[in-house]
Length: 250
Length: 315
Image 1 (cartoon, rainbow over the protein chains, first blue to last red):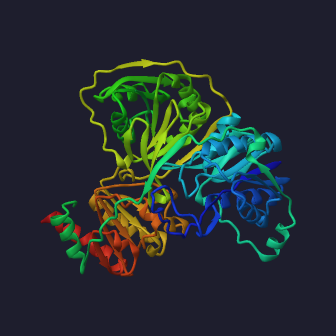
Image 2 (tube, rainbow over the protein chains, first blue to last red; image 1 turned 60 degrees about the vertical axis):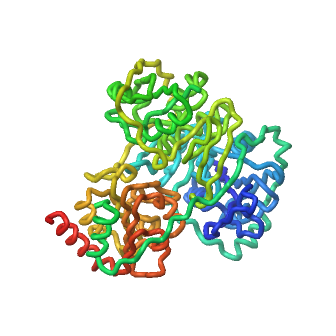
Image 3 (cartoon, each protein chain N blue to C red; image 1 turned 120 degrees about the horizontal axis):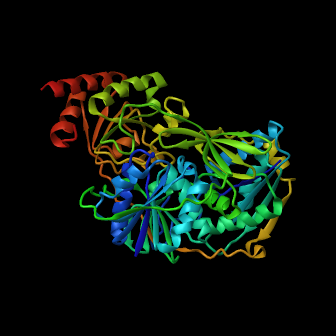
C-alpha cells in the first residue's frame, strides 16, 4: 500500500503572531516556521502503519514557497520515503486551491490513503482534507484519533462532539488527524543526514494545469479587543462573594 | 438573498447550535430555509418551524442520513444547492466535516467559523487561534459558511409561519459506513451550551482529581472542561477540551482551575462573560484575562469553594 501525506509550513506553535502595521496580514518575515503540528501527526501515523508492515511507500507532499523544502526534509527525516514540493512563490494558496493541487498529485501517485492534519494552526480553516476527498469522490475520516487499516477498508475512530465514533471507509480514502492519534517522534541526527539523500522532486504549480486563483479576499486583519485583567481576591469566600454580588453569575 | 441552514440535531431534538446559526443567517438576509437530514427526524423539522425567521423547512429522511455521514449529506446538499446564495452550518464536528465537501463540489471557497457578518459577502473570522481577526470578502456565487456559535445569540422560537416539506433523499453512496460510537456519559449540560463551565488543567495532577471540579460543577449546574494539557496527560476525555483545537465556549461564567492559560486555551474561552481563575502560580497568564483571580492551592481551594457554594445556597 502507498500513503500520501500532506505537510504545511506554518508559523511555529510558540510564536506570538503580530499584525502588520498596514493591517494587510500577519508578520511572517523573520518568524520561526515549522511543520503544522497536525501534519506531523499525519506523518507519524503513516510511519507507524509502515512499521506495522502494511505500507510499502510514504510520499510526503508540500505546497508553497521554496522554503517548504525544509518542511519536506523534516518529514523525510521522520521516515517518509520521498518528497514532492509543488512550488508556488507568488499566489496566496487557499484550501480549495491546495485540494486541487493535491488531487492532481494523487492522480499521478495513485496512493491508497491520504493523511493530512485536520487544520493548520495559521488559518485554522479545517477544510483541505474534506475538499480533497470530495474532489476525488473518496470517503473521509476527519478528526481521527485511531486508524485501523485493512486491505480494502479502513476503520477510523473520530473525535466528535460528545465522544467518539468509528466509521468504516472503503479504500482509497482521506484521513485528517486529531491530536490524540499519536505522539510524533523526535527526529534523530543520523536520520536528518539520511533524509538529505532521499529524493525530493520539485514541480511548479503552473505545470499541473490547476486553477489556484484565490476566492477569498482578505480586506484587513486586526487584533481582537484585549480583555482587561480583573482583580485578585484573597480567599475563596471573597471569590464567591464577588461572583455572587458583583458579577451576579452565581 | 436565499439562505440554506443545515440543522444540527440527533434525530430526536434540535441542537441549540442551529439557533445560533439561524441568527447569523438573519443578519445576511430574510429568506431562510432549514434542511433537516436524518432518520425519523420529521419532528425535529416541525420544531424548526416554530422559529419566526424560518420560511421553509426541508426534511430528508433516510437511514443513510442517521449518522450524518459527510459523503451522503454533502451529496444531498449539493442536489439543492443551486437554489441558494448562502449555505450555513454551525462550526460543530458535523458542520466542519460536511460543508467543505459541499464547497469543493460547487468549486467555491468555504468561509470557516465566522464571528461577524459585515455584509452578504463580507465576514469576520478568527485566524491564529483567535489572536488575529480577518475580514474576508467572498467572490463566489454561493457562499459556504460555518458559524462560530458562541458569537451569535440563539434565534427566538416564536411566531413561525413557514412551511414544511419532505425532499427526496439521494441514494446511499455506500463508500462509508457507521461502525460504532462511544459517547461520554454525563448528566451535565453540554460544554458549548452550558451557562457555567468549570475547567481543569495540568495543575489537577491526575484524572481522579477532576472529582474536585465535579463537586463544584454539580452545585453550579455547570459543564466540565479541560485544557489540552490535561487531555494530553489523560486526565480528561478529548471532548472536554476547550481551546484552538477543541471546543470554543462563551458561558456566563468560566472557572479555570489549575490552568496556566496558554494562548491556545485562551482561544477557546476568552469570550466568556465572566472568568474566574484559581492557580497557585501568581504569574500564570490566565490571570491576565481573569476577572477574578485567586492565587491558591487548588486542592485546598476547591473543597472550600464547594462548601462556600453550599453556604450561599442556604443563605
